[in-house]
Image (cartoon, rainbow, N blue to C red; front, side):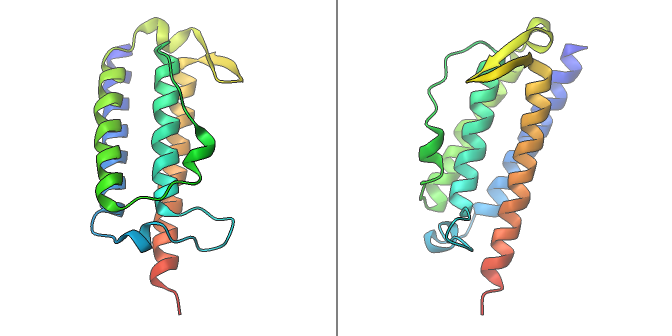
Length: 149
């Protein structure tokens, strides 16, 4: 069963990364770093945070060390080229991590930062949902940017 889950997660995260690329590709730096409100997040922040979250989660599931500076993700500013490089790097690492997931990784309790331990498959499902929420935020932020008066 875990091979089927590996294949499903590889496809889901691969598709997610392609959607992130579509949202970023061709946008100028001003658009990518624009915030619709002072406390809202830009496309660059949302991409940076989404990738940081998924990599931290997957490293935790695989019991690999992770040094994430979550706070800095919310100060990120970047152009399309840099964001696309980040997406490509995350895509490669996620692919490698998912390809090596074991049955134990999916079923045994795994800590993640200061959060209570959960089975790895729960972390993976929850994080994928989190990433899709941010993809929707990115799409809305672009719509708001395009609708400015």
